[in-house]
Image (cartoon, rainbow, N blue to C red):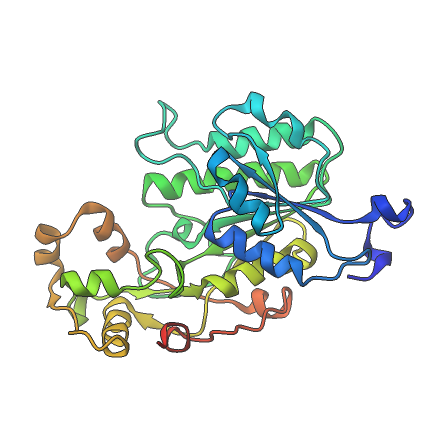
Length: 315
């Protein structure tokens, strides 16, 4: 990025280097770190740091060129060193799961703890939060712009909405805060990143009259979107992320089956599916939407390497 857009430009060179902090540095976070390794900001390549709650991940992070910081969003006292540390923050950590939430199950205490830690000293210039497209709820197959009001239908989506509010509140304190609404993430080199295991189990999908639109993005394209948003994301701006596939869920699994040379999954009506499938899977089958991604293309200027799942799943 041009140095005249760098708030550190007046400092000595050794202090001008951008410092990017990744919160929740799993598979996508490591891909982001690789993307950032190729990025040239106004003062050279940014230094990448990552918060991890697992000391066992420290060697892996170091091997990826990432400076590890051991801390836990569920233990706010361990986050003190994050204050004033980074010029840009990428928040990839999910809210607590169903077994981890307390009485206020609709809140995301992890995002709140991070925000409190960042407020203790100089705020970062930018913060990007990776949310979920599930905050829209069921849209009956309609095209969904970012201006559509959220209507979370599940507890996990409600916690994501709360996390977005925390991020926006931090944005009003002076951080250029952007929110990415992310659909299903896939990649052949990602654990569980393809439908192959489910296809081999013969898990059914919905019959065509009951089927729902689903959205996808390759993990590498998601990582590039995150990296771009750290510099190009606008203040208090939300971005839908998705590829161009426009497939219903059953058609996605049929395509994957053909690519993997496996039998296509059986099709069942919704009434039968409710008896055969777990509630967690049924919740995804109960929401249908198609994400509009105009902002992703025009503002983040992301050019997809995998424009459809056919290119992304190709063996």
